[in-house]
Image (cartoon, rainbow over all chains, first blue to last red; front, side, top):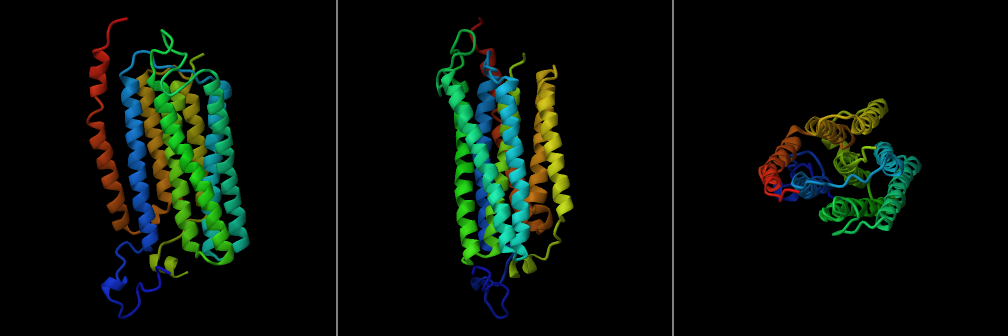
Length: 215
Length: 105
């Protein structure tokens, strides 16, 4: 659709004859969005790092079991969902609809597993008394109120991105199956999904591993 | 298939993607392991950030395919990214000032 006028002999520049990056416009749009979203997450990570360095008694409540183990499993789920997405894009480019849907299904399953594990972890932390502006840790208790704020903001925004990603992948899969969407769209959805994985690559060590309980 | 034609890039094979995936998993396990080593905080932070950047670079280059795209796309996206993060980091040493201003316990 958007590749229709591009590269045609005689098409004017305004009709899309020139493609400086040699990518479809929707793909470029997704890249630009990804860069802006990455900067948003970078700003949140910077705020978290700033507050953490500036505090004396940052809580380290993540025990190896269940917190770090489950977070590692979540990392595995996202990384695996990324490789399945790569397979899906490859199948889509070869026109294999069934194979594409199968790989996209696995990608969505990985994302869904991530969401379930993450929501369960949130539930556990909230039960322990962790809130955005209070928590039972530190000396004296509750002396680092921003632990919850930074944690919930970072992981909450990320979880929202994963949820939206799973829904979008579902819509793309349905559209690709019915022939409404070309293989390009699967690739563009894949870009978003890899970005979500990429952000987790930073959140996991900086938030979880650095707050791993030392005993 | 006009899109991939116009892009004219070489595809990475399945083996390449699986190798990248395995590398990412190994680096993640390494990070978990490092978290339980009694390293000085600064060193640990540098190693963790370094590993995260390498993982990010692998994902961007291979999974997101940027390695096989035109150089102009890479140059439009990445240097600006790095620059913005550096600009944000300018304010980071202020957190040390804040630490020094805390009431003694």
